[in-house]
Length: 350
Length: 111
Image (cartoon, rainbow over all chains, first blue to last red; front, top):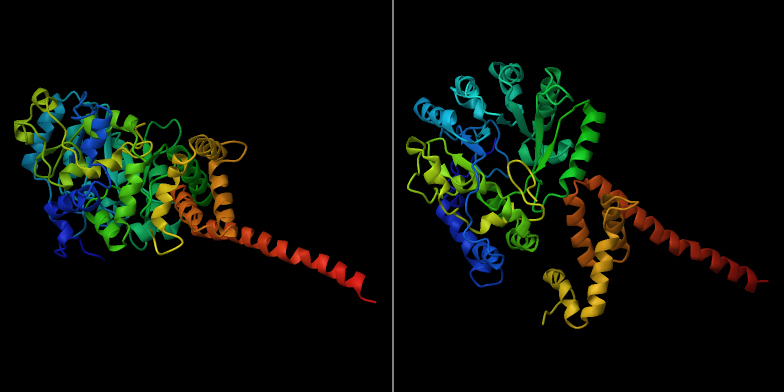
């Protein structure tokens, strides 16, 4: 299995280096406008939060997969895991937040040794939509995870799973050999307990990321193709497909540079810029919490180590009113969320 | 000026043709955009047709554009190659069917 950029001591693992790459070249010489200048054209600068709706908590960067596009640079060699102490601080916030959605992510969040306890405790808070982002293969990775579908069902968890394509070749190329077959088996097991079935109330959504240096097509058309293919080939049902654009950071940035696609990809993002997507971009209604409790405007800013521009920077000092009164930190990677119909952890936004 | 007849970066400048004739340029792009909208054919089907025609026309810009467009729509490599074979079959068929004209002419001229 491949190693993370961090384990390989790759230059790109350094977040300062990523910020340099995103600021130099075509953006420094004026060939393309910086994101700040672009949103100034439509008087959308500075970007400010609206009502907080989603609290996204990253339980750790450890994962059983090493996907080639991963913006987290997750993998089995990543040891950053949320402690019980930070989980307790998160629970205090979950009990009092105005957010209607709790979104647990990773890495593979299930690999955190206190994952089940945390889900049990968090589900008591009565949050309306409780999401766990599962990579699917974790369910088949080890016997101790085999009962996850029933565990999710017990706590009425909304499962959101990555699935880059309905064909084996494209999926395995992005996510690793054998991932497609394990993902199909896991989806069938989720279906078997009621997930993804019409009227069951157990929500199962899939996430599509393009497997290369191109943007996602129309979300609805892709959803129809996925539904048709997964039903006819494997008798699999799911509710919605979220089409998510790959942002030019971390491993995807490394891939873009190594494959000499970086400039062309940035051109594509800028040309597809849609001011309507800026209105609903996810950093305006989301807060991201890292494994060690720091607060970020979004998961991508977390991976670039761009902490919120607020007096409150850590979950232990959480104050929703103070946090809402901040400017959102932006840079050229933000073009990934404003291209075409826009992109967020919940799919298109415009 | 580029030393090559084709430069991939020129595709980005396609929109600039309106600068030298705004009216006709805009009419073309309006027409072009309308053609590729969902209609009796899906946008996906139109993208595959465009990919095949891009090859029969041997337009490098169109090949780049519609290879990317078909990938974005989740179209597989197998589907893309089949579409190109459809174009190639028509192209070669169009050459060969003229053989009948040649045969007709030969039959007319020979004793």
